[in-house]
Image 1 (tube, rainbow, N blue to C red):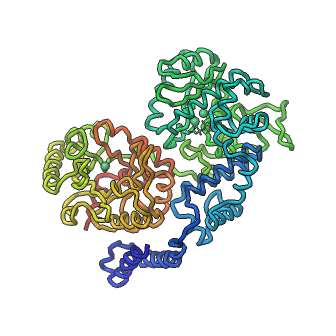
Image 2: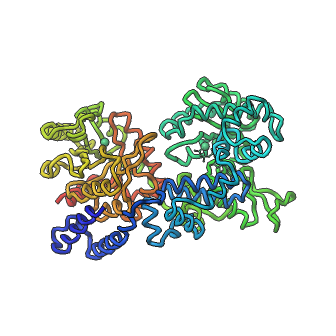
Image 3: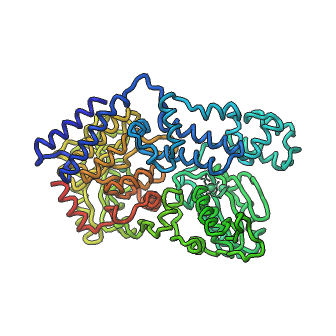
Length: 638
Ligand code: DGT
Ligand code: CA
Ligand code: CA
Ligand code: ZN
């Protein structure tokens, strides 16, 4: 800890001593002063950060506890707002890029969204004692095993409570035994069918590998939607739920179809070849599990109610709850069927005509709001922005004219420079950078200096051969080594058009070390972009632990681009960090990191991810013309 602080301070002292050669190229004396204030703050906080022994819980553990509190409150039957307040706090905490210990020491916990005084006090309690009294009391009241039970498909909070109260069931094993013994079927609201469904749910639980990546779920979902839309009875159809909002991982796929005749659509759906088991087959709603393990729900509804239904089933739950409140404030009850006038006691007036919405636009317009793109519907400020007609103009596929990160047969790619370039021409790109791996990445066939220089020659040749159709630049994806140094010497980097620095090794290092490595790369004047900055990979590789607040700000200060890697197994920067980065004035780029021609089509996942981070075209450099981009790199590399 102290070591890198001194390194940083030295850096600043150099800035002060020699304004001409500031290694971080501070834009102004003012921003330099801000840095110093910031560092002073960190120094004051240092004793807190290095306190030992450390009882306090980390961000993830605190989020987990809040989530369990939320589940237990829901089982107890508490008010939905209270249930959601803990769930939202957990989500916020999972997304904050900074250490809660630091934020707490600053006294700014309540500046975080969804963290009020009560939650903040509970965070402080966990940081100080490593425990939460509120959670301990809940555990004494409600057996913890019920939380797992409630997440079984076909159970939910109400039934978990029922089984506990009626049969004293407190864990999954007991539930399975009771179901096998036919004890559940006789309970109120239960039957043989729902009992079997729970047994299936328990079996699914044991097979479950967690949530699906959007890269696996989206093609499968789109195929089913296309199949259903081809039926003559289908009038319209859409994906809903988390997959429509573009979340990185998908719990289950939700599909809506508008039709007057639901039966043929239900039959077609449950009869598909790739169905492993039918979880439910009702008149207007069915669920299946595909052979891949993915679960899919299809609902059929009237076209006249399309807007309210699509809005409801797109979610998120937190977005819906706020929408319903806004409607109530205007004397309307909003659900999936309609907007219905209510009386002063918020009871629906049956005699009053309901407002049917056949489009989502109509739902939002009726409530006096701007249409909210699905990617933003997470109750992260979009509701208020839509009410004030101040939503951002999110980036689209059409804005992108370049790809700054791709591999070829020189390292671990499968196609040649020319094949990649021609495929990019077909996709309408105006310029690209070839960026193979550097030498120390042996497993990725990283390039030696000699082979890199050879490759630069070939890039120039292909560029000449393809003329005006596309501009091809010569670059490298240089490894940030475990000690923070870069894998090619500066004079080699200086000879390239564009340099990406990326973390591939030493990903389990401590926060201070990882932060120091990223800062080193960012502060190297030859580095133009940090590739997939957090190095996360679904499903298994967690993001590195870094002080993102410092890293993003350093990138912004030094004009180093931060990548949004479009590969659905990466999606890195994640949306929350992309949003923070652009708010800090950092430049972003959305790239495919293609290792073969087909990967170039993964760009849309990156666009969706950027949109979830509220990113607009003006924040993204590969929307720039080639002239603007080449002027920028010339300027930056001087
Ligand atoms: P997932 O499947 O875990 O990736 O996430 P979602 O958002 O797709 O959640 P899911 O499949 O449980 O439900 C789809 C949408 O339906 C959800 O985003 C909001 C809506 N929804 C589900 N349950 C409720 C509810 O109890 N109240 C309200 N207002 N909306 C709900
Ligand atoms: Ca879902
Ligand atoms: Ca669902
Ligand atoms: Zn790469």
